[in-house]
Image 1 (tube, helix red, strand yellow):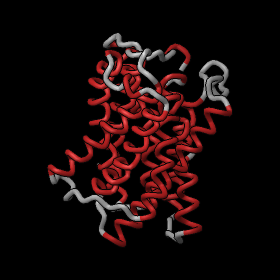
Image 2: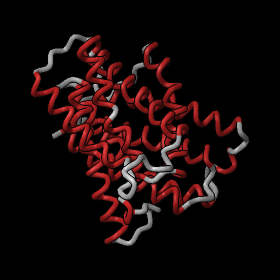
Image 3: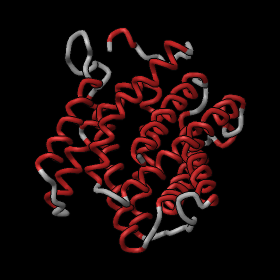
Image 4: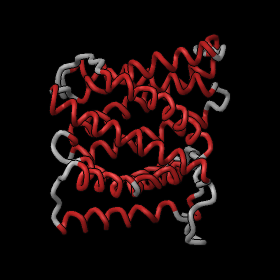
Length: 276
């Protein structure tokens, strides 16, 4: 249930993020990246202060400090994907993650899996593959260039690093999800703020396009924070590969939400649903 709650919140987040970036094309790239990271941090802190999934504490272990720079790049790559790639195409990584995490859990962490569990993961993964194919040609969508696949693989590294580091800190130091992600994204937010200053874009932080963007991004990052802490809670109960396998449902959830938003509510997401 934690995973499925996380997936629905994540899909909602991505749709709102897409609406926000399409509706504010003049917002600066670095500024948009900073505001999403900072608003996610604020939303995570608020969840922590509520005590919903445990108390909030800030931890700055060396492992967190070393991982944070990856988050800086991942945040920028995500902005690029929002601007250049259809939402449903970005789910291609959802079927690669379970294979990767299953290999780590089985070969490195020596976690036992029954044949039925392995088969279940494989079938879920096969179901997700279809969302990266063009329905007319049955080939990978043309927008999935080598550069985009590189971003996907980097995202896989980022997700896996967060998951395994969190499980380690949770098991060793009892660090909960809200504390882990609040600590991580405080560092990332500060770093991205410095990037904005270094690039001379400080004056753009609160200009008219940015203020409009902040309103929508606040909602999307609230969903993102809920999704992330639920994901972390699921990781305290099962292996990373088991959580990853259930995430193979994400392409379907996102696709249905995109159809509802674009076809029924007539909100443009620049998705070409006629060829999916």
